[in-house]
Length: 335
Image 1 (cartoon, one colour):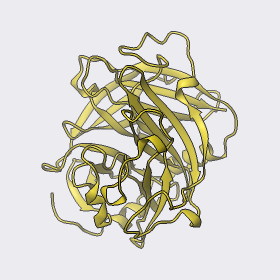
Image 2 (cartoon, helix red, strand yellow; image 1 turned 180 degrees about the horizontal axis):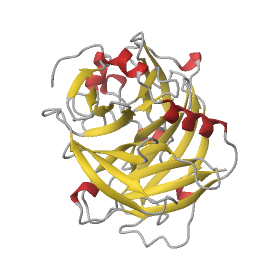
Image 3 (cartoon, helix red, strand yellow; image 1 turned 30 degrees about the vertical axis):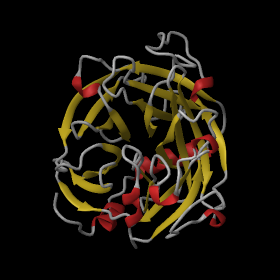
């Protein structure tokens, strides 16, 4: 891909206000989180596999998802009631050998994507060509293999881009999954290029063999987010929990050489535990799972309103191209 240019401020100027309004509605909404619907994408369609970061486009009424193995952006269109979904196209993204795309933001005239390899954040046009890079602090280069950038979200104002690594950076020490992991929740000002970081602590796990991490972020405002924490334990299955957090000065770690257990973490409150949600008609899981709804959820986006006016959250699971997993779109209703 071409070298870096001043991509950030352009992206902020082109921010999609409708996306921001949906996130703001979610932030203000109070009430129960329930499952509206689920839809399993066809396993015989290669475009269904390895979907990760997602973004909803109100104007086109399309859900976009990055497909990491082939470095593509897949377009998925719902029916009027958000119960059935159809894959319509796939756009190849020309990022050379730095594929493994995991996060996605939609702009009116392009996209922002992040890749675990590098890692990198690229701004690309609607033809899939890179037109600039948003540069991260150098210590993100210490990210562990396959535990690097997994998330990307634009604030409703369009000014701030959020990301974090899936697991603790190498410069910040051991993973410490049995006590939770500290990751650097990173906010990039697309106008000034200023970067601030805050410590976010994942849930503790009872087993050291549990694969754990932050798989997605959704910005609700310039300083408030939903964080998707996901785990997998062989023989038990997945967990997926959404937490609400807010940036506070006491948890800042900007430019810190090392983040450890002495560093204060951001406060967080549980927004939804997918393992406790239910819906009639969900088929049995293809591998052991605490709930048939659960799988490897990696994508999160503010979706369109339901016909009754309730806002939605959309989630997508990455099937890793394995027969024991499923590529599922889950629609949650809020309130």
